[in-house]
Amino acid sequence: MKAPALERRLETRTPEDTEALGARLGRTAPAGGLLGLVGELGAGKTCLVRGLAAGLGADPGAVHSPSFTIVTAYEGGRLPLAHVDLYRLEPDKLDELFFRDVLFGNGVAAVEWYDRLGEDASDEALVVELAHAPEGRAVWLRAYGARHARWLATALANGGA
Image (cartoon, rainbow, N blue to C red):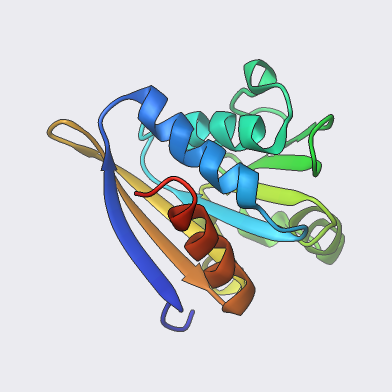
């Protein structure tokens, strides 16, 4: 993957802060947006997706980790949300249809364990890496490609970070 077009580091102190960041991303998400989520178990990936759903106008209470279903779709918002979890799936098991229809559809795709895609990862994505920090979570936001850089810039401008 090439260097990010836009990069930002911030911290969230509580799960509510992480959800609020996700909501800012959801309110500004473009159709076809790809959000790659990276971080160890319990780092806040699903929490951020719950906020993303709220920002899109979908029911955040319905969001759960899709580890056993791989893809969960959430409708009812401004754009449909596909929540993908690659934790239990080998990247070589993903086919072209999955990439075309889920990751690059008309809605927003949020992919947990995005780093498992390796070389198959898209050059157009907003990658969010979450890690435990002494007082909450450290969050790195890296936008790859012009469309995702605009998404990140807009989200950061609309609510600060």
